[in-house]
Structure formats: C-alpha cells, structure tokens
Amino acid sequence: MNQPEMTAANPAQRLSPVAAIAIIVGIVVGAGIFKTPSMVAGVTGDVGWMIVAWVLGGVISLAGALCYAELATTYPHAGGDYHFLARAFGKPVSFLYAWAKATVINTGSIALLAFVFGDYMSKVVSLGTYSTAIWAVGIVVALTLINLIGIHAASWVQTFLTIIEVTGLVCVAIAGFVLAGDAPASPAAFSTSPSLGMFGLAMVFVLLTYGGWNEAAYISAEVRGGKRAIVPVIVLSILILTVIYVLVNIAILAGMGLTGLADSKAVAADLMGRAFGPWGERALGVFVAISALTSINATMIVGARTNFALGRDWPALRFMSGWQAYRGSPVAAYWVQSILSLALVGLGIWQTDGFEVMVEFTAPVFWSFLFLVGISLFVMRVKDPAVERPFKVPLYPITPVLFCLTCGYLAYSSVTYAVSKNAVHVSLWVMAVGLVALLLTHKVRRSA
Image 1 (cartoon, one colour):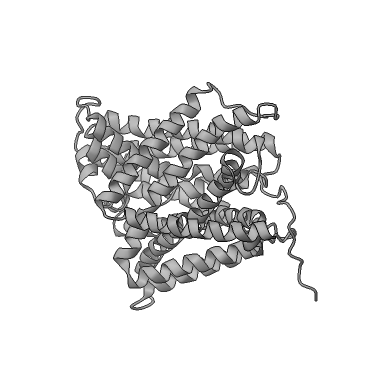
Image 2 (cartoon, one colour):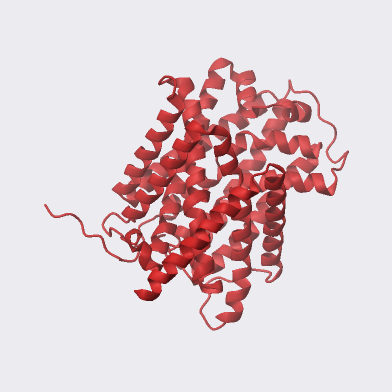
C-alpha cells in the first residue's frame, strides 16, 4: 500500500466556523480563569473596578481582534502572524518571530499546560513518583497523534473539550449564585479607586487571561466560508469570552465576597467545595485538567501551522513544509512541535526552577511581536493601498492605536517583571540563537 504523498499543497477550507470558534475559545479559556480573579480582586480592591477591568479586557481584545480580522481577510494564510510580519517587515523579522514561537512560546505553553494536566490527573489516578511527568508526556503524544489523523479529528476533539470546559465554568458560576446569600457583604461598587499603576497591573492579569485569541489568524485559510466567515468567527469568539469571564467573576463575587475572593488561593476549588462539598472540589479538578487539555490541543493546531509556513519560506527548513492534503495537516511540523514540547517537559522534570523561568520569559517576546503585528496593519495600509480589503477595521486609526498601546504597555511590564525575576537573560539567549539560525538559514536560502 502506497503512503500518502507529502505535498506543498495549500490548506483546504475544511474547518467549520463552529470548530474555529471552539479552537479560539479553547486556547483562551485556560487554567488562568480559575486563578486570576483573586489577583485582580486583590489589586483593584473594589467590586466595581474589578468588573470594569474584565469588561475593558474584552474591549481591548475586541480591538485587537478587529485588527486581526482585517489582516486575516486581506492576507489569509496558514502562517498567521508570521505571514503578516513577513509582508510588512520582511522575512528576517518573521523568521525571528517563528523561531520564538516554535522554540518557546507555543512549545513552552504546551509543556506547562501538560504539567497542569498531569498535576490534576495525578490526584485522580496516581502513576507513582513521576506521575505528573508520565501524564504530561502521555497527553502530548496522544494529542499529537490525534492531530496527525487530520483536522477533522482534531477539530471534533476540540469542540467536544471546549463544551466540557465551558460547562465547568457554568458550574462555577452556579456555585457562586448558590452561595450568594451566605457571602460576606462587599463594599459598595466604586467606593474606592485603585491607583493607575495598580489598575494597570490588574489589566496585565486580565489580558493574560484573555490571551490567545490572535491564534485565529493561523486558521484563517482553513475556515469554510473563507474571508466572509473569519470576521464573525473572530468577533463572536471575543464576545463569548467576554460574557463568560464577566459572568464568572460576578458569580464568584456573589458567592465569596470581595475579601474572600482576594484572600483565596484556589478560587474555583474553594467555591465548588463550599457549594457542593468534597465531590465539588474533585469535579473542579477534572474541569481544570480538561481546561488544560483543551488549550494544549488548540495550541498544537495553530502552532504546527507556524512551523509549516516557516518551512515553505526557508529551504533549510523545507522538511516542515509538507502538507498531507487528505488529512489537512502539516505532519512534519506537528512532529517537530511535539519533539520540542517533550524536550521542555523533560527539562521541567529535572530543573523545576529553570522551567518556570523559561516559561516566564515568554511574555516579553510574545507582547513585543504582537505589538509589531499591530504596527503591520499601518504598514500594509501604506505599502499595499490598492489591495482589496474585504473587511476594514472600524474607527481607524483609533482602534489599532489602542491595540498597539496596550501591547506596548504589556511588553514593557513583562520586561520589567522578567528583569525583577532575573529571567530576561534567558530571552536574550534564545533570540541570540535565533539570530544565528537566521544567518545560517539565510545562507542556505541564497545558495538554493
């Protein structure tokens, strides 16, 4: 029996809009929403300002999503951000972005989430001394194999997991409203005001929880309905996320009060335990594990497409450019991503502190490149004014300016935090290696 041919075919439109929304929501709604509400409550110190922060997070994310909608409908490509940066600033800048994404941002997220999954699953079924690591390795391999079956299997799994994940958040919200009468009274909304710096810190936590919606750009070329479908997919995803986050926070406040929320180290677990007893806490653990699982799968789907785009542009990395048309998957790109993720899992087993530092340093790199993507919208308006734009960002240039200012602020805050943790040198080393890789691949490209 002949093996299916690996080709350089373009991705086909096999992804339904519902599956695309499930991928975006699945990436964004990670384990963070089970932890960050207490941080935001502690920093703002006021019920009203806390809710404002979560609503504002949705507004800023929507502004960014509208910018991405213009870029994704004008230049639909499996490379997403990589493709936008290449068109605006050239291949070297996009290569460095893809390098950072392939070596740290995506693979680091997969490894970290795999450990979260392993931690919670080990409480349900312990596999011995290295239970967490065994679960982590097993889930990375299992999800890679599912994605290798094809985009239909991966998107079906993603939709199913996202439904379970959202159900878990609904249970948390119900628990909050069940306990509403027993919670200590919170001070009146807007009775106190946080300083600008403290509110900015709250927004950092909020926007980190909203992070991941930009990955929609990586599947823009595969959504059925093409350019007409991607705009409602992106906008609906942000609206769904905003409604979920705001309602969950209102419910938690109703069930725990502002002081109880700010003092809690495990908000959702405490709330479920108080409302439904020990079984509620156990159920919450399963939901958190599924939340991590959902984010891993979605991150794998979009991350492999960055590797695929990189392979198509650089001869030295051509081995990642194969696309099996009947599967709708970049097979080699998935294997590269899986191997790097497993390497980081292995590093996390033996050097826990180093692993945490490695993950911490992803934020400065991520927000810096996201800032450049926002700037690329302005650049392409100037460089390519005649191209058809099926969708134009409303309130231009106010909307992209708001998005760029937010990314710039978060990049600055992330760098400041990394310096305080002595983690910024790791970022510099990774990007330095990326520069060397750029020079080597550029040399191969010129000689090809």
